Image 1 (cartoon, one colour):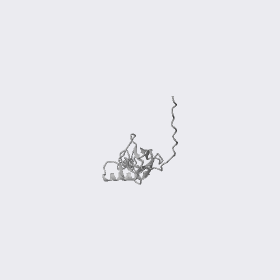
Image 2 (cartoon, helix red, strand yellow):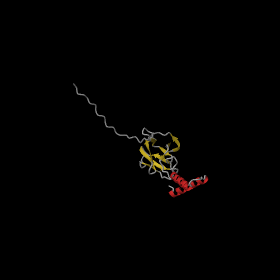
Image 3 (cartoon, helix red, strand yellow):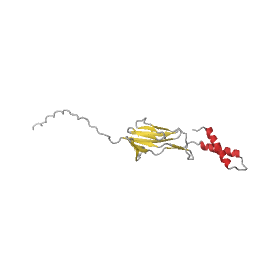
Image 4 (cartoon, helix red, strand yellow):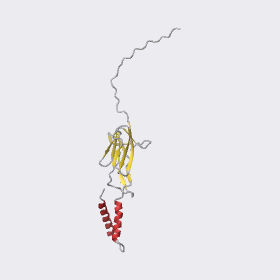
Length: 184
């Protein structure tokens, strides 16, 4: 986060530049510049009020460039097979005026400790959740105040191979002798 003194300086420079281009008569320029600098400072230091994470892209782990249709279950959880991954775009924040806010540290986590999905955060702040094993995991983004959460449900895919071992031959027990009913 930028130092507040630097932001105040930038706001004052903007205000002076604004009023130097359009000088007015019969008003207190000092007060006008100071008031404008205060408004600019509020604008420059506005806190984030919205944290947005876009829709993930699903792909096979073996071929991440080939996107698959996104599937969400009845509970709106992202549905993956155990050979797939979901890539979420970098999160963004905006202030109450819709202006992008930068400088906040956004932390990305998942609650399965790597048992259901493995998290990789890329240099561009996108996040890849690779399926590990069947189950559900909550994935979250937070800046300490705002947060976004999604659920990823992993199900087992089709069998990749069928292994047949050596046949087991066992002696069968001898058949019991036939029972003859008693004569009448």
